[in-house]
Length: 345
Image (cartoon, rainbow, N blue to C red; front, side, top):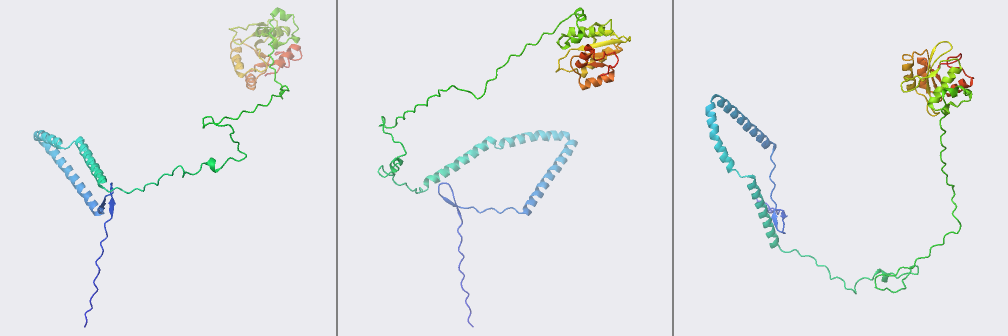
């Protein structure tokens, strides 16, 4: 029986260890990575740390119990431990020394890297070709593309070889001979007309004036009050008089109606754009009844009343006479505040 000879196995080729390039061109073998710690080793480290901390805690607790039972010995032991701790702290390196050592190590590493760079062979660099000579330079744009017929050429020679004379400017077009006529006409600012001065009349003068033709809006405030009092005297209130002033407390005219009632009138000479508001009615209503003892309260104005003012007057029983009703009263086409047909508000 012939023994079969097993073929010899070829030895496995050892794979080269990859090298890593360092500064200066030198190569050194790459270090093998350390194996990562497994979960088991991490759990053991945690258990060991917990055991150490537990032992330290128990030792501290026992020492504290012993120090409470033997305070004298504890003080002596503490005094003896102070020099030992001081010696340990003195023997430990300071942060300044550690920084100096780190700087020295960094300087040494930089020196080694610089020395390796100097000893490494120089890397060949491709040198650029010789620059082209003046005769080999490409033609300029002016030579390659001569000016065409549409491009102007400078006929005048250069004085300094760098600048060219500027072309002469064209003459401006002549101005139009026709006069300028704007499409719009300027507006002329008209001066405001001066306001007419308010007419001032006395009570005696008003008694001799036809009140039906009197313009109450043209009167000054004092004359307006006198005109309302003259209307009261004309229509049966013989004792009507003005009491307006700084301390009138809302009453401008006091009179006694033909039926015997005490009449208290307040006068408001306002322009057409200014209306009598509810505040004016409220101030008048607060004094006409309680202070002046009015049995008939009237507010007369040359303007109008606002809606809230009329509502307040209706609720308080104050009679309101606006500019239109005042004119009708003066002309005799409308009733007096106390006469028949007089309405509230």
